Image (tube, rainbow, N blue to C red; front, side, top):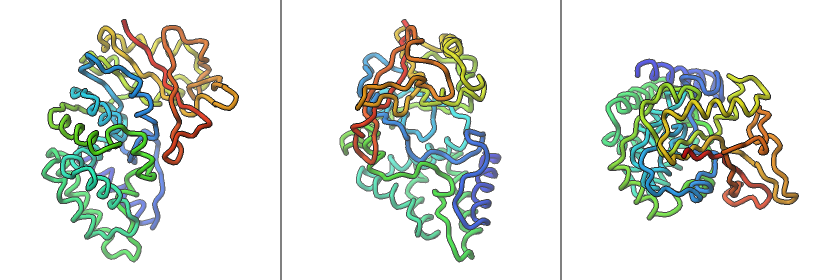
Length: 323
């Protein structure tokens, strides 16, 4: 925890000293800025999945939206993983506690308020107080010290930088993210998610996606890997082929149950509707074609652009069912 706290202080201090918000460091590294919300249309594909008799899931943590949408669907035993340890402190120190602390409308207002550029240091500290009773001990320690550090190094600065702008990426219009997330689409959905959260058991593991088959010890009905496959080139090199995907799938078999479903790869803007054309290589940096797929299959659903289905392109998801 202390390493995470010190690394976060460095992220803050670097930007405060520069007097501006910017991204630096290595993406997807151990301590890096965290996604505020998903950039996927999770509602688009989860609405097409049958969750009947599904009990345990494994998911990338990232923004936490995969987890919260799963919890809305009634999946309350969830193991998460990520190569960025700071995802833990955002989700279990901010996102989940805020849901437990606030009703639907107040949650939406609170999430907007904390990213206002002119938010004072004093206002931020007051806004955070309702969350502390709902934080675990690690998150409480982390955020208590971080808020104090942020206040001390910025209180005498003429230009104050918003803490969450310094720590998060993908800070988009709130309504865009409501559209993409089932758990946020109505007060009823939100309340159902809150109730399920009270019964949920969620763990976090610092782990690379390619090591899941070795590192995880449970078996799962559902596995969600987001678009991590777009970055497999870091291990496979560019233009990797289908055989690499097959070997990865084989590595996951020890942690899958019978009739489990693996969401292998999210595909942004996969299908152009005007000419009915599909991307030749659905997974970025690979040479894997749709025609290469054997027992995998692809579903398509709307690409969300500025809060609405684009009408021009669809996103896709490569799935594999384990029998």
